[in-house]
Image (cartoon, rainbow, N blue to C red; front, side, top):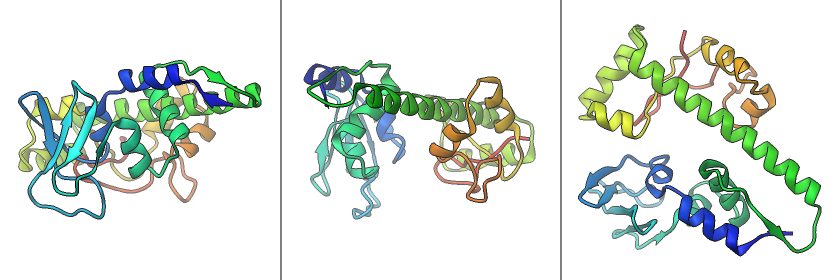
Length: 215
């Protein structure tokens, strides 16, 4: 069983190429386009040559000559196959996928359900840590705001790309997602649990958006 061509086109049309690309590199608006450093790990550069066109839904790097749409970017940088990349974007964009051909329809529905749960967990984390960065009076959050200001990021940029912060340890996020009915297995599958199996996010600060846990 395969994803129908109509669904693939619906996903391409609905996908926000700027939002997807911002998972991998910081972008700045330049007229009708956005630019930033190339996110491909084998192309290290100091001057931005990576261009994203939201109107066309395409990106292109003038340095390494790579280009494509949001599906191609996810395949390259998340090591997903085509169907996985389309499914990932469908969940983000709210597109209901249709399938054609043979296969186990029930198994496909279960896989789609798991993907929806994972995306719900990731979306909840993005909202929680974005709010924590902007609203928390903790020293950690203030330090993160100072860090971003020192890097020249305006408040509007932080809001546009939903940057967030999470300090090490704590259980604020874990407690918050319980109210949303998000299961631990979904948090684990989304990579939101520490490697030691704790309830908080693993890791500390990351650039350009430091991440971690609220009190």
